[in-house]
Length: 416
Image (tube, rainbow, N blue to C red):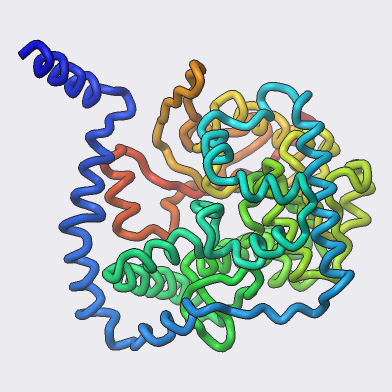
């Protein structure tokens, strides 16, 4: 009896935890296991079946061979540059200031998921690195990084998931069609072997539709600015950068910053897609004002952010990672953005508040509504719900009493 009483008390304490697992369990039951799958099948057969997209999905889930413009020594030299840059970044990362150290939540991910990649990089095993990078868009390594990996893996494990996948794709496509006042012409790179709907030779997955929308928004903001500089903090695999660079009609400089492990994927994705553009990796040149004038694509670890010149960036972007970071880190990033931004700051994040405990250390995040630049120097242009949200995501954030918003701030006082 004593054992059962203790077990009962442990269960009560578990359910009273600040990060209530009740909500996660409830989401699993409502959002993924029972009600939502029924709704997904019903939605598919009553609304989306007539589009006849199953064959396009099956074709897009087959291996996609990317036709590189180059092979041999030039291709290998890209991988060698990535290895060299990564090794230097990891060495310098040991002595960086606390706010730029990897957060405890993401350190768990690195420890668990990235060992194979890290080993290949440290050993400079080019052949093994090729295997990983040429298929990263279908790998568990890239879960939650703006690739097709999450949905591809779920669809492979769950036959019902293809209905959810098509529903989500149609939902995103229809929203984009409404916004652009007509069917958009979608395209995306085959680098990294993405999975999605095969349309006109491109594999289009839901995240690439979202990238297309954000690219339209960014290009319209920067229209008329001579060689604008964009800095994306939290680059993921470089999908958003790829769309902006592809869509922007004039010359620009795109700076991407992330932790070294993630930056490997963005470096590969952009360098094989834009082999003729002048690209700078960490350790290859000093990061100064002239750097943004001489290079078109710049990939740097997050701790280089303080080196950006004051009032040198036309648009800062963060998409769905600031609210996943520790509050001290985001506060430091915000300070640097306020200093070096000369025009716009856009971020897309959620309003949930989380607490983390890892190896005896306790931290919490900063909700989206608290990620606000200095009100004396910036005005808020808009705040609206994140445009692309599917039903399971809405259910999850409803249970977590949170929402996803897009914010745009404009700098009005450069003297600060």
